[in-house]
Length: 345
Image 1 (tube, rainbow, N blue to C red):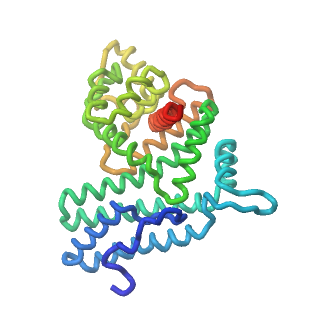
Image 2: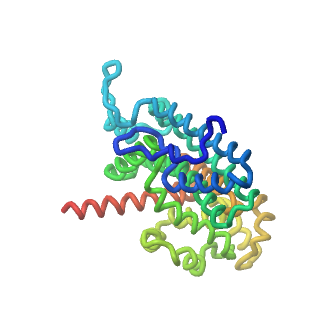
Image 3: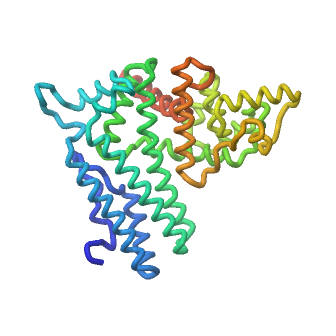
């Protein structure tokens, strides 16, 4: 196999205090090793190809990790640099100013995550075509989805930092989480958020939307059942907020607020209470967001909703000014702040 490895055990999670980007976390490493074991007999040539992709990720991570850590302290051209100055920069600079002030490691690290997403997407395709077990294929898909959610978490954190109404303590907590994500390209928040949003997205495909009321009791019941306590608290405490409710509508139905408003107007003109899913494209002129099979669909839907929300915010237009992901992540940060506050009193 020349320079390739038959396992990825050499790609260890960094020790405490390490500033390296993590190529594979423990679960990913175990999963990729199983892929190698399955391919060793079935297709050695394919195993070499997969190993090469993983080694490319390792080389990329090593190169990026050579840039200064988010937590490195020093003075450059008379200006102090530390984790505190980074947090202050994130808290006070707007979106248009932020790019050229961000650490190089943060900018390049996003490219690493995209490369990792492509690698796991390719490995998943190999598994499907190599007759892997359904369990292994599902684990690979979940790993790929988690990488996508880590990419999305960075976008959500940036979006929250652009909210002038975000309380200062929560803003700093978001900035600290963003810096930690940049350091290792891992985000512990994803472990709790990803399963919930994935479950809601999956249920979205299973419900038969009533395009009259748009959101009904039955849909919300389906969304909330079997999900964790944090999501249920979010639903019960925040759904009365107009912006949260509107962003929920967009998420569930795969339609923009403007499309939803157009459908409601059409219902009123037709003097009917509801229409079927198959009638929607004829009214709005395009299909709703697709199914949950490909993580790219989820990410594309998020970016479209985020861009629409930002446009409404700039124009002070009707409709949600935040995405559901933004609202939910903000809720989790606020809950943690309250818990820490009461725990320290």
